[in-house]
Amino acid sequence: MDKFFKLKENGTNISTEIIAGFTTFFAMSYIIFVNPAILSQTGMPSQAVFLATIIAAAVGTLVMGLFANVPYAQAPGMGLNAFFTYTVCFALGFTWQQALALVFICGLVNILITVTKIRKSIIKSIPESLQNAISGGIGIFIAYIGLKGCGFLQFISETGSLLSINNEPFTSDGTFSGIFSVVSNGGIVPGLVEFTDPTSQLALIGLLITIILYIKNVKGGILISIILTTLIGIPFKVVDVSSISLTSGSISQAFSDLQITFGAAFGKEGMQSLFTDASRIPLVIMTVFAFSLSDVFDTIGTFIGTGRRAGIFSAEDQNSLETSTGFKSKMDKALFADAIATSVGAIFGTSNTTTYVESAAGIGAGGRTGLTSVVTAILFLLCILLTPIAGIVPSAATSPILVIVGIMMISSFAKINWENPEEAVPAFFASIFMGLCYSISYGIAAGFITYCLIKALKGKFSEVHPILFVSTLLFILNFIVLAIL
Image (cartoon, rainbow, N blue to C red):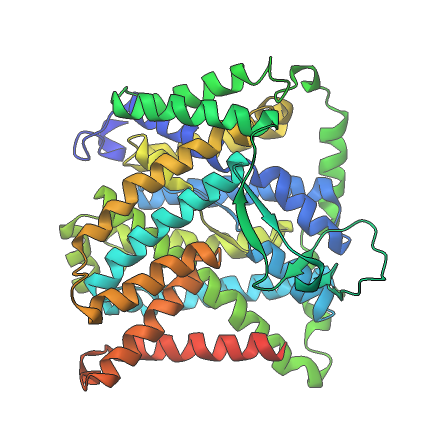
């Protein structure tokens, strides 16, 4: 075990890696419940998506652990699944089978740009100040996810600020049922809740426990916090132990439904119908492009942010990234593992699979090798049998962990020269937009665009790496495409 995962070399041990694997799993296990809820709105069988989510997460995470030996977990990405449902299927009129075909093609594109080193070249082109900004920005993003999950925030929007409900233009005299999507403009105002809800009260207790264990530097403190908060949630009636049931009927039904989505991307209603209408081919290409761009930069941002902060990708590994050929560096292998996961997920019946930023929770618990990922993958597979047990862990127990991890990662801001506008402005926009736009890729886009603009204004455009400039143009093109769609 030690020889395969190089535990001593990475300053870790088996128990630490197991705890980290559990921590990562609990921090991201919500996806096995949320993803089916979102994708099933397209007509996909919910139980099939449930299984596809678990299989995609387990396979992708295992490849990450066994091939790349890094502590990252993968699963269908939040945001990408919403894009799949609300934009690709509802707004653009693609069937869910065609949408799966688009995701599969996106996966092939990701594999291509990884094998041809385009993805690696993008990473090398990002200046150090922006890399630190991305790391700190992910800290803000993770902490914001945590605060929302804790139920500490409420958002108020006046009627005049509402733009659409269920993807239909909002009118004050309209009636809506089964609301699944509400869009409001800048008139929405965030605020702090009054803590009258048991969930937010439990999360506050969980956050206090997590802070105490973090300050005391208790080994395994993150996992201990999750367990203690879950137990405390029982008398708070946030955790319902009566819901635990190990019956096999639903499992059999889920595998039966999986036959509907497995391979649907290649059937008559999927890939075979995707290119029959020549007038929609440009739309197909633009949609694949939008999928791929977001997927690629979400992953790059996660690797740069968490890997740089925790030392998972060492200076030696980063040098190897720049000079090696093939898949010799850990970063090379990690990028390839991420690239193949999307296509695997599409085959089983789910939207883009990506490297999860919640992996930072396990890294914060001490995970440094692929053993963390293997443990997480095994727990995902066990969820097929033990979903009711995994499901009782509330977000109030896991969300405080993300807040603490965010605190850890924000330290990267100290490495940025805030007195120099050429570093400060791009760093600000890159980091703040990640949280405000709820997207790592949009934050990176904001950083790239302002970086190139400032260099042009200062007469230093020659300092902009050509790949960074091309990436910036692609981001701008993506925003134009989204505006047109």
